Image (cartoon, rainbow, N blue to C red; front, side):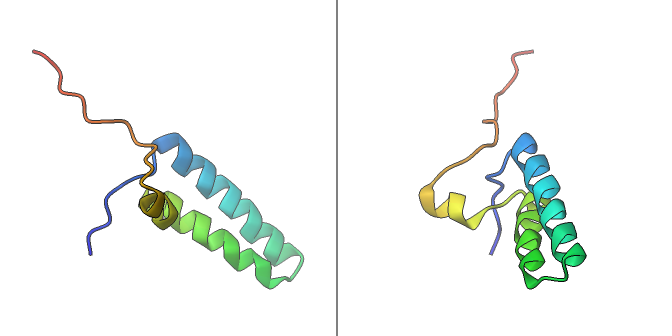
Length: 68
């Protein structure tokens, strides 16, 4: 299955940062909830969110052809 990118650049950066904070907090407090941050890190690095796909949302910029 090919994952079509549906997460834009800014959205993916925010997901990776928040996911890393959650993973770090989970490691610091020795709690299993830190694993939930891995979901955000994965969706940010892959630029794909399955929930966005179900809701037919995209935060990517549309392909705009330039006139030469």
